[in-house]
Length: 412
Image (cartoon, rainbow, N blue to C red; front, side):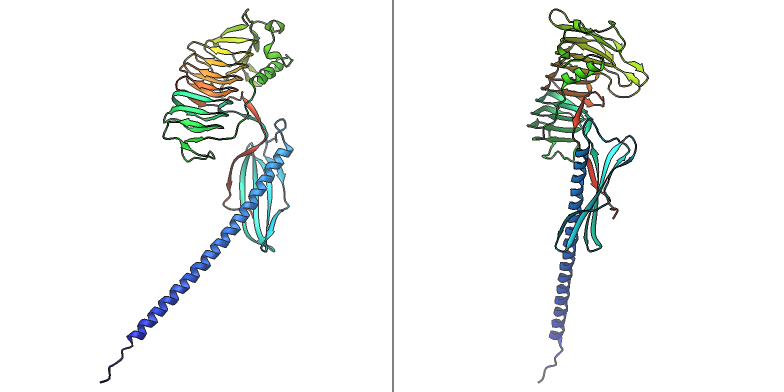
């Protein structure tokens, strides 16, 4: 008997063959797609690298043509550098790369644009543009806490602002209200579990800590005192240590400044009360007080620049500074010492503290402003500190990038 063949085997073979062909085509398509993605990523990366080289060129241009004593003038918007000619970056694999740069003043800031391009013949294959905001050479204000030595907080602390030590930072406990960056050229130590540690100083949380950071320049308090006194008409590099009797101080309570008398032990005493600032045609000015020795300071006051060639010791419960007294909303009191600063009082302090030696806080006051020490900063307990602008403590900078990002739509 002959059996009827239904052809099922042939049909199944054809189905399997079709599926195999489809899978093969799908694999080839996926491979081609991935190859295109890889090629596009290569072009993207190459164009971005070219634009980054342009950024380095802009930084070099700013540093070569400007300095702390002659920063670029961005009082009005305008072009600082316009490079219309593309600079060849590299050629390889049949592709060419170039970039062009432009530096402008935008709303008082130095802003750079660097466009990197990959092309073949006249066809642009990929273009990427970076926008950078530069801190140009000049005098840069310090807002925060800076020490050439250690920074030590021995109790529960709240810090709003940036903290840096060229040695070590040791903070026993930070409160939930702390916001800012804590860096040390040595080691940052804190037992707070909410602190995020990062080698490059970039964190996703509000409290960022970095050990092994680059050292920062600490301005000299003695040089500030000399400059302040020179502005008052005195001269001589040894000004901070001269005897008060050798200075022509003018009236004992002059409007603009007062040179304090020293006792047999080389100490001055100053007890101030109320607003010490005065109005001029250019705005409000802080009255200057200078002690050519150790200064014992007391009282509640604002609108004053307190200077001493030796230590400044502040005792008693008092309020320092009033950011709203002159309508500026900025710290208006500056305490600057060629030696140490020791704070024994309590209550609030709106001031910039600057010492060539150590700064020690033994009282309970909250400090708004800045603290800069050529030695160490120590709080024998916790600290309540918030960085505020003062315009008093300035340090020369060579210029650096403040922030940058890639533009979504390059101008090519």
